[in-house]
Image (cartoon, rainbow, N blue to C red):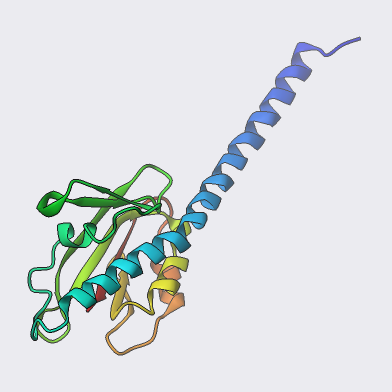
Length: 178
């Protein structure tokens, strides 16, 4: 009157399988919980970039840099900033395997430097397409893994965003703003 070894092994295997399945679901839940605050942090820094560029001519973002952008992102919960001044770097946690780089560079809508691009590498499938849906209001153009999902003057294409996303922490998002 007790459990046999076989019964204990079977129950242990079932518990382990359920635990693994739950872990996968939890990772998606964690990333989904970071989308809103992460997009808020990005949009806040984008707004500050625009304010700082006022009155600087036709190409105010000709010298836009990762360090410049990251210095505008201090004290965030989803985006971590390391270093200060010209050595500042930032990384996002819209992933379930650590933090991944954010880079910023001058971009072109009509002339190089009239806009800038923000690139988020190794972004989780769980952030796709929700992050893009939120960021469309602050972006001139957007792409996922090289596929345009918002063209200059166009409308956001959620179906194209969903189709362009890949599983895992493998997605690269590029937002262009001015």
